[in-house]
Amino acid sequence: MTASSVRYRFSDSASVGVLLGMSLRQAVPLVAGVLWLTLCLMLQVPLLGIAGPVVGAVVSFGRWRRAPLYEVAAPGARLLWRRWRNQDRWTRTSLLAAGPGLDDDLPDALVGLELMDISILWPPGEREVAVVSDHRSGCLSMVVEVEGAGFPVASLSEQDSMVASWGAAIAPLARAHCPVSRITWQEWSHPAGVAGHREFLAGVTASSPHQAARNDYELLLIDQAPITVAHEVLVTLTVDLRRVRRRRGVDHRQVAIDVLTDEVRQFCSRLSASGFAADAPMSAAALSTAVRLRSDPLHSAHVQTFGRSLAAATGRGCVEWGPMAVQPDWFGVRVDGSFHRSFRVATWPMLPVAADWLGPLLTVDGVTRTVSVVLEPVPLSQASSDANRQLTSIEADQMQKERHGFRLTARERRRHDDVETRERELAEGHPVFRHVGLVTVTAESEDTLEEASSRMEQAAAQSLLDLRPLGARQEEGWVASLPFGRSVRQGGWR
Image 1 (cartoon, rainbow, N blue to C red):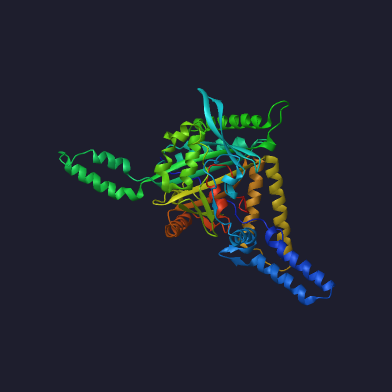
Image 2: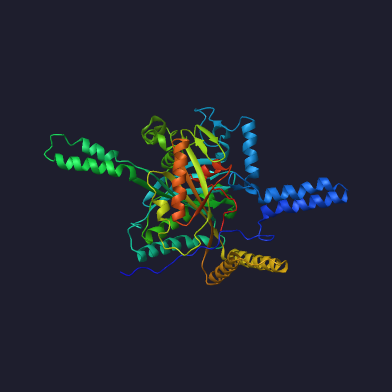
């Protein structure tokens, strides 16, 4: 079998500037500083006016804790304000009042989320599934567990075929007037250990005639225990209530649930036809267990007993999915007994890559982490308008630079070529998805978190990715790593 020659190319992840290559948030402080200087000159107080451009330049080009100041100024101020008022640590006030719809039992980053258990028709019969309602954004979500068939060990041509099948499965979601507003792909990996194998080995007595084989098996377990990793992939489909057509005399939320169920059913059917294993949407008990495990994997043994508890039997166990305590910091957040640190993918590969380019990032052993990719389908007409607007903005920016004597860099010329390529692909009918990547690392202590984060940054570099910590937004990053359909949206959509 010959090797595949397919190479995948990402466009430049840098945003298109509105003024001399600067983004809107970076340009606003400079413009505000110049306007302040103009006002002070009109009032004949020039010394006071000089502070305007100086402060604007500091905000636009300054950095604070490895992050651009114009990105972290607002969330950093909120974090410092909460810390000054001793409100940076949230704790649940009542165990008996836990449940959906009660803001007092959820931290700020989870307020507005409700986990509902509903019955839907799913072949071969009726099934109980979980629907996540986000009252803050007006969205409904369902979560599906998806498995691939041996992608890491497949040949290059087979991997290309799987990638093409995945693209064919999500392509219909980019149609015009589609109610699906977001698809979230999350891969959770954690050390699995060899407890089951050791239980089997314990059943073999020391007087067994196969003592030599037993000793060899014990040595094998010792070698494999640190690198035994479990992977779980969840795909969340989110429907925007504003995109669902209203029906007279029918509750709009129920109509949205029916639409979401139909979209998920068709999506799973396309995945199954493409060779992926996609089961029915997760139940409320399974989803709440997954949320607990990702929030605090240190208590995994305790969480997995909830399904057999008295609370689960009475219907209470599946809705108490919220944490007990949350304490955010600038570069991390503590949730119960675990520490989390979230990164955003600041730069995607600049070089053409093969289908398995994420291999180094997804196969790191000994680290508990979640890799999330949020896809937002863009209708063809809107994508064409966006490409045309970006191309016009780039050309105008280049003309302005040439007029003022600035030379065009190779990266700016490539950005122009990328937009032209996208415009040509849109004319050929290819769908477009805005996307953002997030990586959340989880550890049992701050020291372990530092070590695990360093390993993930090195693995990301091998995958040609540049990870940047979510400065002062770690609580939102932790929530984005959970299968709720809620994500961090900040200048990273491409």
